[in-house]
Image (cartoon, rainbow, N blue to C red; front, side, top):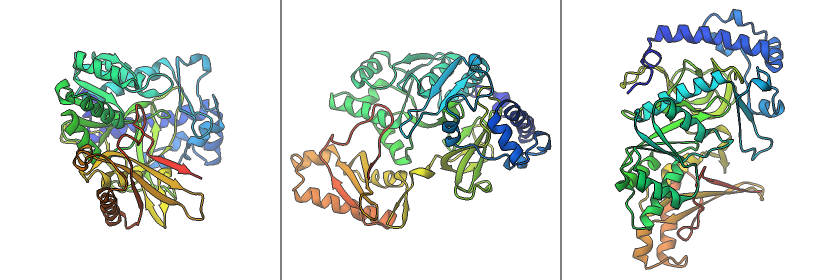
Length: 437
């Protein structure tokens, strides 16, 4: 189903007209209400009235995550703190958290775009969704929750963690939809199998997975485990939270951006120059209708491409390709650029491996090195009669994985086969890269 046909199937001309009108208003609102933007626009000679077409989007300067930290906590808000009805924040693992807030109007808009996104994934009024995204300062749980309630879906607000309780409720409630990180979906399903249970017997029809990068190979693993249709959900708290973009369950040919509220563009990650449609680069988003925190040309750091052609599902919203990774997640090993998602895609092609891995980057020496930790598949360990790192079969598997990665990446990497269940399982966002410095 299409939740809002008027907005999601509008003609290209009507969409562009609305985007331009809202872009002028968003730039004017930010410039009038936020001292940071007022100064930045003045320095760049940006006049909202001079924005005559969407091509003029490149005129305002970029907003970066560092600006939110520099203006911590309320400096980028366009409304008084008393006008906020909710506040969310990042984890702050790399310094002070980034603070985001919402007016009542912002929450209404968030519920709307999230309802569209849930409908894209296959949700319908009357369905039951098992929501295992984290609640609290993280936007995922409450974002899905409010959007589902808005469209008339029953929400089971389980939150993340407590895997055994998740399994009990999944069996007892038998929801149509499952919402969580892809790594947690794998963990729940594997734990069920260890208990002699079949995740497919629960009858979940669709899974809404996001909040961390994941590959087509992991999609196939999850779908085989659960017997569902897995769709990719994209969002970030600085823009709104979940609800920025979602794949359609029918075709999964890119993630539909709610571009009447969030205007996308692709720029060169190094120069910041605009790139043509179809080119891969960094996703930049402008909030067209937000009141509290009007992000203008926010550099997400996420690498993707843009497709403005209508989708076969009937929607005419622009689509982004699945996120390849973050520009700042790129590892430079022996002069070769490597993204964790590339390694994941390669590793999950081997049936001999479990779908869990960790990349250990050691920066204590002059040049960084990368060690890949992987687990053997359960069936392989059973065939061996148990795990012993000294077994020839284990050494042989390590050599095969190394050869495969060399073929994919052109790198000689240290591959360590670790005992089953030793790589930490995630009940939230998976930690794929461990740094030693």
